[in-house]
Length: 351
Image 1 (cartoon, helix red, strand yellow):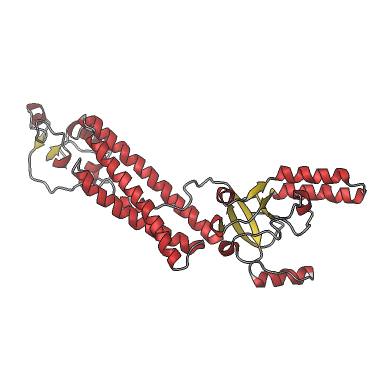
Image 2 (image 1 turned 30 degrees about the horizontal axis):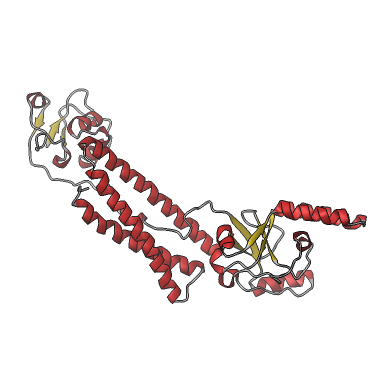
């Protein structure tokens, strides 16, 4: 339909009258290549999409006497179908951590021989490297030891604990590569946590039993270091599946960002469907959109699990490789699920 602009018109008023929804005014600006949507000239001709006109009696809005006076001219126009969700399926990506705020502890470990050798030359004593926790997990020197937390903080071995920090990047005093421990996964594997205050309380207990003044001064200094580090002790073994290195952690945070964007887009899609249902006084638009969204997210979850399983078959059970295969699986599954269920939903209400 071709519309002739009248005095006092705006794209907002035109969309409200002819499309039934004022917020659809950008479609008019886009179809007519308007550089300044706020500036319209009386008599200017605008193309309005026939598919978006408010239906009346099963037809497009009729040419009433009032509208004829408004300068509306019926003419064939090239139809530009709106695309409300371009590339929508590509946001169905799931990180292996649904909650980006899940509690983490940071442990620094010497896993690189070069770094260990450099440190060894500084302190003039041998420094050994440890197995990469991202591959082999964390293991205390003696899981069966009854050593109290304060004694571990004093450096006594063997110990049932592994030290970690609540600081976002770990203790600044410790040299080594950072590894993030997922607290919930560690607990699920049987590990227990002993917090900073518990360590400090045990050091205070030791100090009360210490008669030597110099030793008490050292304990006071140690307590300051424990508090400054935010030291936490993890008792027991922690599996590799609960640990991420720097690269894997960065990938996880990136995937979580995409995941959150997908959640936001789902909310926008559902809001649009709800408005459409209210306007049409029908539950069909909401039901159809629900089918699309549930199908997309369910398929993304299944795809992530299948991708991770495929990675495990190739030996990528933990670390960045496992995250990559899981993410690709989630992406492929989400796209297939959304567009597959879109076909089903279109039989309920076409988008």
